[in-house]
Length: 611
Ligand code: AGP
Image 1: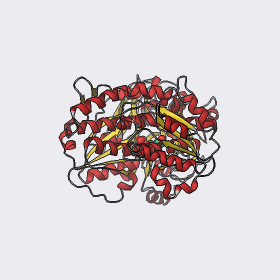
Image 2 (image 1 turned 90 degrees about the vertical axis):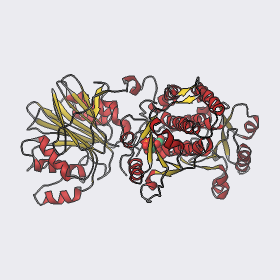
Image 3 (image 1 turned 60 degrees about the horizontal axis):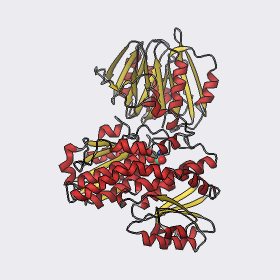
Image 4 (image 1 turned 120 degrees about the vertical axis):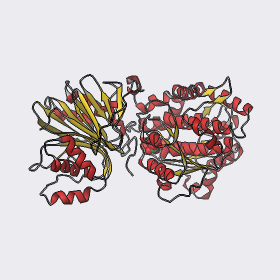
């Protein structure tokens, strides 16, 4: 997903913009660029394909000014190239040197481009963004704010924008619809960025732009209005993010840091919500809808990727604990198949970023059809969090690593609390809830115990890192955990890994098993344990090497597998909170040993805000 950072103030814009781009690198990108207004308005622009560091070297000692915009681009319209990188400027001959950076998609850019071409505009790139720059230039009549408002009234699609113009060297105009944009309010300065990670180093006072909002910013003033120029007052709040949360600290990678943050993250996720004394789960964000949830006829989970795997675990938990029919849908499928949403349906969106385009669109479809919508989201104030009727924040802190780890655990932890919350309002007894809460309270320390195996896991993994095809198998709730393990491995080590129900292997995939093939079983003591032992035998007799995640003390499985990673014995509904941890570590170590870019894997973005 693209990243935007803009600055207006009295300090050197270049260093602030480059540092901000580095904080936004985790979002995923393939090129970057910066534009700065020097002195009385001389616009300087530089763009490059590749890492932000390369752009920084390009800037050298030049680019001295205190107003600027910068961007990391994840290619959508137009390939990865310097001409397609942002900032884009308006027409060389007809324009005013207007420069802008953009995150989103201008859906009607082609028709606007044709209209502008008839007015002799010449375009350098294949992008929709450049068309928007030319449109603003065409409509500019000495007032940048008005030109931006007029242009945005003409476009359809999604945008987060930051715009500067040499003729107004003391002005920065920003705007938002659909793609997040946050304004950090400092002392005689403003830092605008796609998310708080690029703002919190400068100020903790900030607000998120609402959709269809334009802000005209000078060093000591800000005016926010709609694209129709109706003034609005933003709600400035204290950012909940601390700088050290987004710093790498002593870790080599954010992913490893976030794996090791999981005990603390889950403790924070449960804090104030697990009431062991009164035997209650307290979820303020959904309490208004407690009755509707308890009488729901059907619960549909939607999400993508890791969030979908957490949704699959949520499905088991809702049916097992709350006894309500539940199902899971890829958000990208749900949104297009004209789903049947009858009265009494609850749709639960799971998303770390709260900005995944498919999940947001599926949520909109569910609302359109009258479902009660609930969001299980990590980023406070994100689009999905704002669009749902109710919600539960994960509270695991900012997740920077592209491969989701602590957020997955947070999603599962919140789904568990939600199932218990609803279940207790239905048939789940006080005793059952009481014992579940006591076990949940132990989970953070049990995660720490699993993490102690990291060196053993690294050693075992090293034996298989040159195998290019792995299988991940599990039954019951261990099946979505197997899917998550496969996703972790493939997205950062680029090994082809496939997850499936253990029973499914015999219906075709067993043909893949050859001598030494790594087959990972999530094989804790659960209601289908004996069946899994048979599946392990089927793999071993065909030469496969079995790596198992198993319950501490299980000597049977130890005698059957090449490698075993252990998890403490907990109630079946809580097992996913532990069994995924060895798989996260295995993927991490495999990627590092294969020399891959763990935090910025190729082709991936932290949040997929385009379809
Ligand atoms: C998981 O490691 C991936 N980064 C990806 O599958 C991610 O979970 C998916 O894109 C959904 O993102 P979201 O949780 O922000 O909606």
